[in-house]
Length: 248
Image 1 (tube, rainbow, N blue to C red):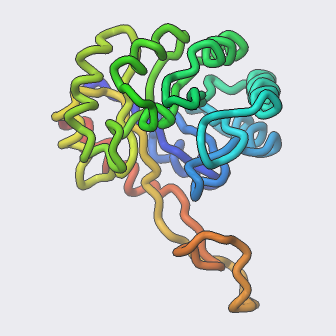
Image 2: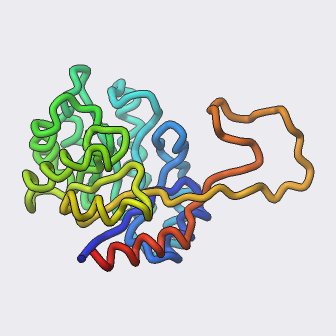
């Protein structure tokens, strides 16, 4: 199988782990607990300076939804320009209208501003009101690919829709499954959908190197995220997934 594997990361360490394991591309984010927001300029530059694999950067000024104010749209344009100057290969973004339709006009503007970088329309697609109309609209914007879980929480649950999207898209745009992919289901997802690009995190929990730890003072506001631990891309998992895909 001729495939490409994109690893979603939110740290320099994870980016290097993904590259070491043989990933084709990384999606660089911050704040994965909210689905990913634009990382800092320092992060983008440092990762680019040390990464030979493809680098795509998420352009999302905040969490919550994908309906943006004029000021937020201006932030997105400035972040795209920053990514170009840093040498990114692509950006990952998406804009919706209040009724759940793809905002074709704004997306066209973002894509034109990003050129010659590639544009991926991210999982805002999974919140659009009509996936097949959304597919055609995104093609009109000039985007190179769509990241989708098939409008379900997990890509396995949405695999039938992903298969239909792959078939309908043909050679016009890449459909890339993502959400919940791992070594236990990547083979099945590939076989069901017919996709040849895949998006996942492949993370493991790693402990802090701190010796002194003051307990009971959480720094974040998200349940289930323990202090003094973090999630990083797991080189062994990524290698295992690559080997599975080679056999499909």
